[in-house]
Image (cartoon, rainbow, N blue to C red; front, side, top):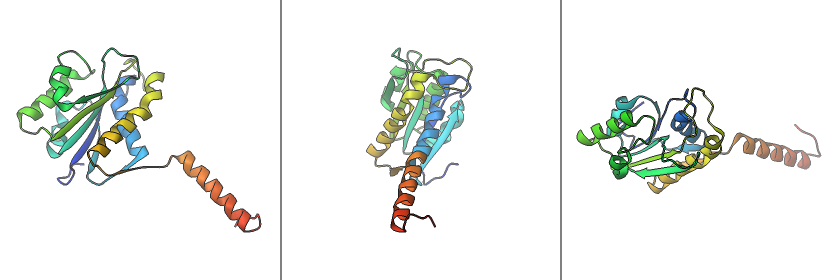
Length: 189
């Protein structure tokens, strides 16, 4: 859902049925789980939408795009490119959706829809074969990628708060109940 008052967009790209190719979509889902984002932040599971994402770029002052990025590094290696680096980045094939992403960014630039800030975050994929599971190196580095995106947003002064994990909430609940039981003579109410 686009809104004129949204000034930041985080767009996850990739095909989630081609294993690591879908890491951008998985990353924005994890970002939503791990962080409470302000109302001016739009998180988009862009998948393979390509040019259909142009309105999201046009409506945002600052944009983070998350995708699988092949730089020939070890699987799971984190990659960050500034928006100004994208023309040279796409001179060689770097993401599985180079055509869609390159066309999207070129169209945004030509149409005067280029955001004030643009960063491309991603990770070296291991496999883009058919399957919905991420490879072990990519899955192991997913939280680092999400935290890198969150750090970028914080540098841009985007309000966000880290959510507590379900395990952490459960531990706090158990501690609280134990503390309550100790104060009330050992029984639970």
